[in-house]
Amino acid sequence: MGIILDVTDLHIEFHDHDAPETAVEDFDLMLAKGEIVGIVGESGSGKSMSALAIAGLLNRHAISKTGKIMFQGQDLLTCDRKTLRSFQGDEISIIFQEPMTSLNPVKRIGWQVEEPLKIHHPEIKKAERKKRAIEMLHAVGLDNAEDVYYMYPHELSGGMRQRVMIASAMIGNPQILIADEPTTALDVTVQAQIVELLKTLNREMGTSIIFISHDLSLVSQLCERVIVMQKGNIVESGYTKDVFTHPIDSYTKKLIAAIPKIDL
Amino acid sequence: MKKISFKKIIKDPYLAIGILIMGLVLLMIIVGFFWTPYDPTKMSASEKLQGISLRHIMGTDNMGRDVFSRVMYGSRVTLLIAMGTIIIGAGLGTIIGAVTGYYGGVIDEVAMRIIDALFAFPSILLALVIVSVFGVGWMQLVVSLGIAFVPSFARIVRGEVLRCKDMDYIQNARLQGVGSLRMIFVHILPNIKGVLASSILIGFNNAVLAEAGLSYLGVGSQPPYASLGRMLSDAQQYMFTRPSYVMCPGIVIVLMVLGFAFLGEGIKRWE
Ligand SMILES: Nc1ncnc2c1ncn2[C@@H]1O[C@H](COP(=O)(O)OP(=O)(O)OP(=O)(O)O)[C@@H](O)[C@H]1O
Ligand SMILES: [Mg+2]
Image: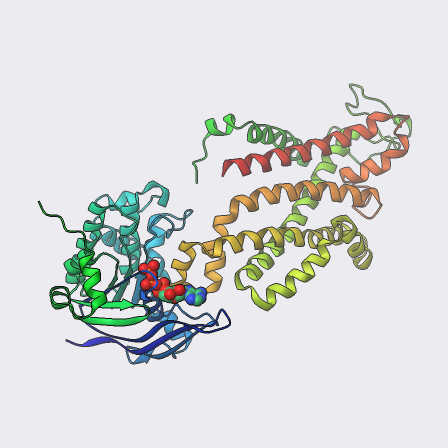
């Protein structure tokens, strides 16, 4: 299968303070079309920073990045802003863990789901946009999509909002969906539903997914391959099965040992 | 956003009183477009400085003109000047505040220092200075007052935009590829419309007062079509001989100011 994203030697450094602080070191990632890769690791290990860099969202002056992030023949670290902007929300989408605050409180759901289309495909007519938005809301499991289309965020639960976020991220049919702890703020049953939804979207739309999580059991359900990070470094990577059954690195072993086991 | 319903409006005394007062004032102004009891500019030597009577419900002025007719007309002038002032002040102020708040950096620093400097003057003094540069006339008056109102709007909007731009949903829009202008005007500004609406109403208030003040100083609207403020200034020398002449336009100004204040407070609570 074709490689659609190739990250090599990614370094991310912060220059906010006197001494530069390294957030990510030697990060490599190859993502094939239609593949789901998990990134796990403790808090502060650099998962979000790597993801944001891939999404082209780390362009503050105080951050220096080296390496290569190749996507559609372009290096996302060096390409011009216009190219980057044209990918964002269309070819590469990202969702976060805060569904409660990620929707604009004064705009209707439909409007927000359609926004990426308005920006990246202004040629699409209003009626067609609406049709697609409602289809997408259906696709993410909101059965009363026609009603939800006209609702405001405060009328929806956290799980429903995360579905709306996913709908908005997926409406442009992106090549890559980055999900940064998309289920952390949700309760366990809703978590499982969201994971199931990501799986379905991946299968039906062929979207590659980078799934970031603290939760190793979710990762093992969803991801073929996994990357384990610690203190900005990749300590282990490979097929999820192999990594979880025969971890080589001592840190990975500790992580796995820490999964609560339920014996009935 | 809550739905607007009659019941809710009635429940909020601020909004209800504001709407009531402004309704009355607006009614008087609208009627004044089609009908006034007398021609507001018609003088009459035999009917100078009359008191309140059935013939002249607000009396007459020192030239024998009907004060009620002049108040109807003057309220319109005052309201239009206040509206013009707010359109310029709030329009420019919002754009400046939104852009500086959103982009930050050098533009923000420079613009805010200028705004701070302007802010240090009372707006009426500032308007006075501008009028003295542009000359007297109602256009000049509106422009001067408008400019004098820019700093306060710019400040308020900038603060709100700063608060809003770090919200998750704005970050999220950014990573969907939303450009800066669309971000400011379509994503951010609708979120601060409550604050903006109540500042506009408070601004209206200040504009009415500032216009009255400037007219009082003789640089406001020009006779024979006087604004309320102008009428006050003309009336002051008869304050003791014919109090109704001062009080009638004065009361209408107070009503307008109160009406706007109540509306502003009502809208603020509505959010
Ligand atoms: N502004 C900053 N200045 C300096 N260092 C920073 C800054 N922001 C983040 N970092 C560092 O970057 C590193 C990586 O953070 P990142 O957010 O990627 O962690 P994470 O793996 O996503 O953690 P979590 O699981 O809590 O989300 C952290 O060690 C953090 O201290
Ligand atoms: Mg993170």
